[in-house]
Image (cartoon, rainbow, N blue to C red; front, side):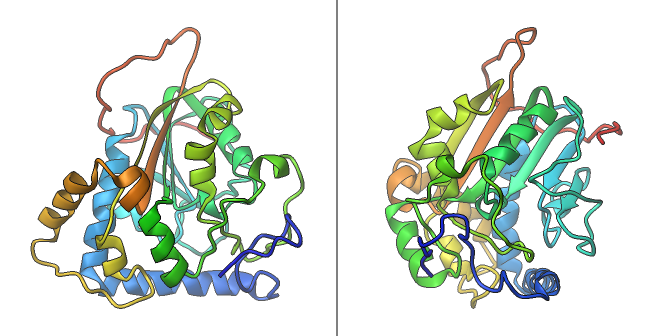
Length: 291
């Protein structure tokens, strides 16, 4: 599906003008949960990605997930606070990424897994997230990646659009387009923000530094069928195959094979200079007041 460029404020996918769009969103959540239950290989693959996100978290708490959707991430990290934009998804809190109900410097980590490419004004969310983080707190983002291989796969087999020419920075600050069902998507947003305009993005977010930005994956994700198609992966030995794929494709994932990206931003402070070294593991969240 290609994006219409007739109106730069109406980039969206199907069904956004449906008066029952929120019901459709609930149906989509249930469809994803059903696929999650039926496909052990899909759970193994996503669990591999979730663990990489958890390894990138700071040691501080609490940890907040934005856009928890069907709630799968919490199975990997039960201590997080899951939020979603609508009620009825099983999230701990209802919160809109465009207007985060958070005070300054109250959370240790924010996780956004497959969220950024659904935001019409992603810079607005990123700025709010940095404000809400404690010094040295981290924003961990996992998104679709753009590579020679992924453009073929997403173009042929994925329903969400991918538009690298979307005027993301020009639209920043403008009102949101009409999208009551939250079906807006552009899988190229992560690529635009963190590869093609990385320096500009980081400079506009306030006091933060880029800890890491890398792409990974190749054949296993498309062979899993995602949440919509038939899975062609074996269950036995899959963990070993995933590690082998990561190792073999690491030198070329950035431009040739990458299907996913992991981006980690850390809030900085004049009183707390950035430190180098390996990424710490996550700890259980603190019972802090965040709203």
